[in-house]
Length: 198
Ligand SMILES: [Zn+2]
Ligand SMILES: [Zn+2]
Image (tube, rainbow, N blue to C red; front, side, top):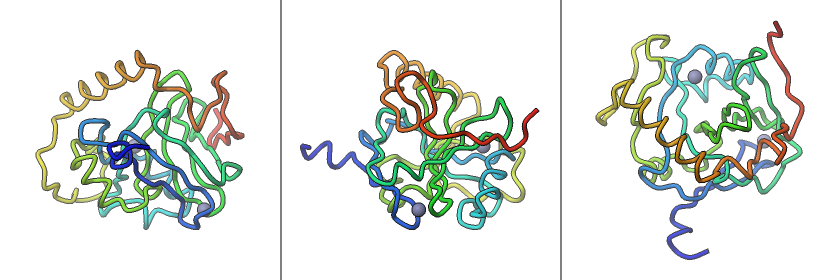
């Protein structure tokens, strides 16, 4: 690994240390740093019993959005777990050893993962590399006063254009695979529990 690659690599890991990984190519503009205030993200944090560590004062989850191919899980792969709130919900991945949330994805065809801050080792340094929070998702669903963000936030439409543009690039450059979450056929690497089957 050369110096540039090393400086763009961040360490990932669960709270108890059984699951570890790395994310590469992390630099300003390489992904989206957002806070999601949607109810579903809160339900996931509460399902894990980790809401006090995951959620901010207004019930938001801090997320780094990247293409899956930039993430490699290196240890504790047998601890990978997944839930969906409903049959059509996002795939929400976590470490079964200690209920640390890992991230959210769509199906394998969508080259996207929102890595949850708790799975990032030294999130302060990650924010330096990734840049400050650029957008708030679903702010209307916040549970209280949203903490002040010291940066200039994108408008909802500005953020939507940014993430759609990135998704297109990640799709065209095939950064959906290999994925730590889905095999080459698009099957989940672990069983998926659906919390509220319809
Ligand atoms: Zn763990
Ligand atoms: Zn959300």
